[in-house]
Amino acid sequence: MLTDIAPPDLVSRSARQSRPDKRPHALIIGAGFGGLAAAIRLGARGYRVTVLERLDQPGGRARVFRQDGFTFDAGPTIVTAPFLFEELWTLCGRRMSEDVRLTALDPFYRLLFDDGTVLDCNDDDAAMRARIAAFAPADVAGYETFLKEAEAIYKVGFEQLSDVPFSTLADMLKALPAMARLRADRSVYGLVSRHVKNERLRTALSFHPLFIGGNPFAVTAIYALVIHLERKYGVHFAHGGTGALVDGLVGLIEGQGGAIRHGAEVAEITVADGAATGVRLADGETLTADIVVSNADAAYTHGTLLPAAHRKRWSDRKLAKARYSMSVVVWYFGTQGRYEDVPHHTILFGPRYRGLIDDIFERKMLAEDFSLYLHRPTATDPALAPPGCDAFYALVPVPNLQGATDWERQAEPFRQAIQQRLEATVLPGLSERIVTSRLMTPPDFRDDYLSVHGAAFGLEPRLLQSAWFRPHNLSEEVDRLYLVGAGTHPGAGLPGVLSSAKILDTVVPHATELA
Image 1 (cartoon, rainbow, N blue to C red):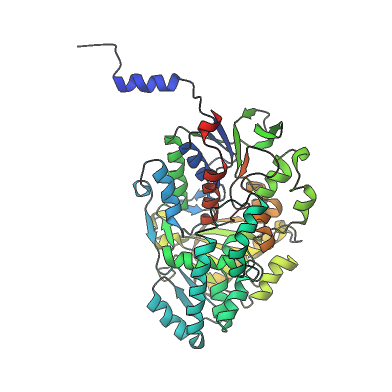
Image 2: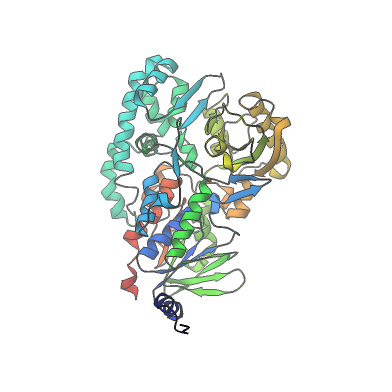
């Protein structure tokens, strides 16, 4: 029998769609991992969420480049704390494995030194002990005592402090005894050097801060926790690339009823009576909100997006005096044919370590020698390249734009130097096999991501720019403004960025308190 009465599920859905959404509104500036994770957490706390992204796709530094049949992750490639992602799916009543497949990598990465020696790293205690015994026989005992200290640091620095806000001086004073016990005043390299003497092993155990924009000779020893984090949870890769994680998070947001607007560049955070009230877009449109969360570069948030009249602690003068992380050059390329002997992650160290780090962070000069990280995702997921091909990116730490490098002139010669280095070491015959190529340099980080000075990781994570000394998750300048991402506490890297969003559960009122 024919009827014009809609089925009950369609009636209820139609009614929901026509009913005004009276939930408190949260505006999030930027669809990087921090902004996406913040959106999910706020959605779970009862907010109607709108994410504003100036680029044409979500992900921020984790966006995806597709060209000539190749898929390249633009930025982060290493997942070391998968449980932080799993938490976001759990908040939405789902399992991450329904949308994203992670593979644990073995080795985590291969370290290739300038003298040709190699060290493969993984979480197999017996295998690592044997490799260290062959690599630096006199340092086996020191290696093991370092691992114990890294574990102790992890238990405090990550388990107790990474998702705790440092909104007041009292918060900092409460944490000081633990930080003092951990000797947070030491550098990561200084900590490693207390335990091992071999310079190559010191390099192997201390380079990790470079993954988050830190100088191993200056960053607080608390970042040694990364070694234990890797060993405890492993190093993982998402099939489809890191962009698959971005797509999964976007799906969660949309499932909560949230929205993402692309091509929406924020020009200003609007403020009234000392509280954030929304944003004004570059095209003049004004959007109102009950709270605003900025996943934009923290220095850009304070120095550009926030009206000058409301800049107190983070004044233009203080931002000018702050220390910023290094930048990077990233060369994305695809090859005809595969390099089956090259693992997923390889780190090639140059002839210098400390001298090169000083050139990058202190002298801010582009040196002729360099170290690089080579990513070969097709070692794990061949579908990221056409059949019989490999996808790569080579990432090289370089000075930020406070240096004098003319990147318009230097970009191509530097890329050629990277190509020559790879061809002479791990990718023989590379120059004849390249079929696609793309380059990002420090000006791209400034222009694409609005990173101050083209710093790839925001403010440098030194002791006096960490915890309470870093831009707070709960803005010190105006009410109802919150910060997530690499530039706020606890810092850069996927675990840090996701933890910054987790802190919102503590500092942002539940939506029912604003309704």
